[in-house]
Image (cartoon, rainbow, N blue to C red; front, side):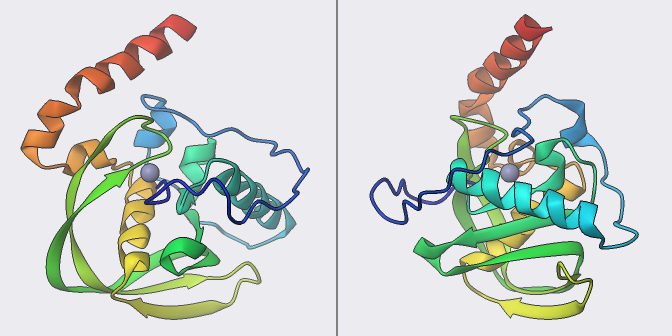
Amino acid sequence: MPEPAPNAANGARPDTRVPKRQVVLYPDPVLRRKAQPVKTVDSSIRELVEDMFLLMDLEEGAGLAAPQVGESLRIFVTGTHERGVPRKAYINPVFVELGGEFESMDEGCLSLPEIRGSVRRPTQVTIRALDIDGREFTETSSDFSARVWQHEFDHLEGVLIIDKMSPLDRLRVRRAVKDLKAAADGDA
Ligand code: ZN
């Protein structure tokens, strides 16, 4: 999920590391697959998580899920200083509670460039996951984090914002979705 606003000037760290992976774009089939649980949080998983953080920063995302870098595993990372979303990895996440009011908000997705639309989600969320040391933790949020968690969790289920957008927005982005498909066909 991209950051809510472009942040050109701030937070420009001189990071010279180059990610090993790339952000996968719709309609790549990996985005539609249900991701597999992580069996052991080992060095290969930590390497993947590092790469995901690197890509999220490069692409100025607020979150990134493993299927979006071509790995069908139940992992996502978050982090944006702008909206107070902690820099964190969530491995094998589950929702303990999804409650509160439903709220509509415009969302974008790094795998669906140029596409944004209104998505309704619950605002009070408790999540349980493993951290990069394989330790279980539980977190509750009623802030922007709650939305990012749900967006990224959807990726682990093969669900995208174009599935959840308001009908009007779905109609509005139809052309852009078609263009993405055409671009992928052109590559093949
Ligand atoms: Zn996304």
